[in-house]
Image (cartoon, rainbow, N blue to C red; front, side):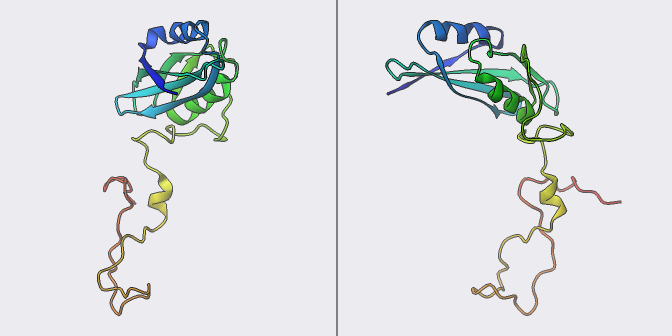
Length: 167
């Protein structure tokens, strides 16, 4: 079983999915997003239940700012199950799906701040809790503290140096 990858322009997203349905790919396996920095790549994996072949459609949705705000046509009229996938992708990556009837959040109670799965988002929990960092060179192998451990606080991975400026 092989997967055919098809790159689709944003404007042709809905039509390309409709064409795939007319060719027998009537089962939506997954729809998700991938942050590529300048765009959110939306991927839909479609299956043909007759011969179990799969087709993966992907499109790059341009991001207008740090909060996401990318826009793409909904495919819920073709695949009713796409509603859940599109709601999750909207909540986690900031992609707005035009034509999506139910846009309530699934995982986050309040949609405050930037979508959490964008690369530009710093996880505040990494900054708020002290990061232990790597093992100190002078620390014993059994995990006990050495006589004079370093007091230097290390920054968590992925957190810019100037992000947490305390007054």
